[in-house]
Image (cartoon, rainbow, N blue to C red; front, top):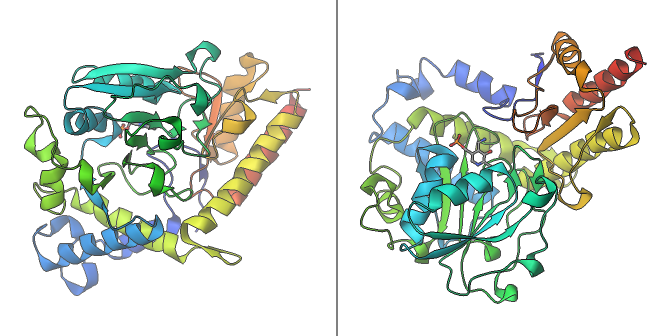
Length: 368
Ligand code: PMP
């Protein structure tokens, strides 16, 4: 089925196959006579859906056995409070500020613990990444927070820091909301990873948390039970009613991911190869053009979120109107940055990026 290409930053485009499967199963899931939305979360049908989703995700992201996979609610923003409530013990926590989302995480954590800035790229308008060797880490910090892909600013960490090599024993917490499953994760460098599903995993409503087992069981007394990672883990994400339909859709997306192949590569490795090619095409076009620009330092440009500007900003509205007419949707940049932003998550095929580049070239010509 042909549809417009949707460049939304999230909730974002889903694979068409997944939407079609869900549509086919909407009224009667696997002969149960029920929609997934209508099932008890404690029944065997939903139990099988949850178990498969967890197993597939563990396989896709190569999550080691000593990490627990939790399906929670509240999105990335709730995790900004839930992480310090569980891990900080009200003590010192280090933040690497690399854009709007880590800034928000830092501010929220300050309500629960002593949050400090270990490094920041604020001085250059969040267009670079401070070298880990320059981070001012507190040896007593309970964890170090890093947003490994800044969705708004288009800044991505391409190699997770090795905190041990930097003299810190603190676990690294990553907010991987906007690039989860777009590339493999080096779990040896991570204590906890969290992310909302609505960019690369499925619809909004479910939040993924992958947490090392030794970090469970340290929640502050004030932490709501439903947000205590140990309670959630002990109850296999069913302490309260989980977002069943969102988990089901994420599960279909995991199955779709497992089916993807690129040469000899499969799953997330296949996605990574495609994502590298998509990003190279778009940045390559922007960089050779005198009409468009991207401000982010080359070593930390996001493969997922590509903010770009027209040199003549008075053409922005015309650019967006023409894009929409050409079947290229939701390209407007975030209001705090301006300009345009193309989010090219896993579900965006290379053809979508080719169509965008062709449109950008045509638009540039008509403006000459
Ligand atoms: N972190 C990042 C990196 C994000 O991109 C977003 C959402 N765009 C959030 C956190 C907040 O997520 P939510 O709206 O699901 O709370």
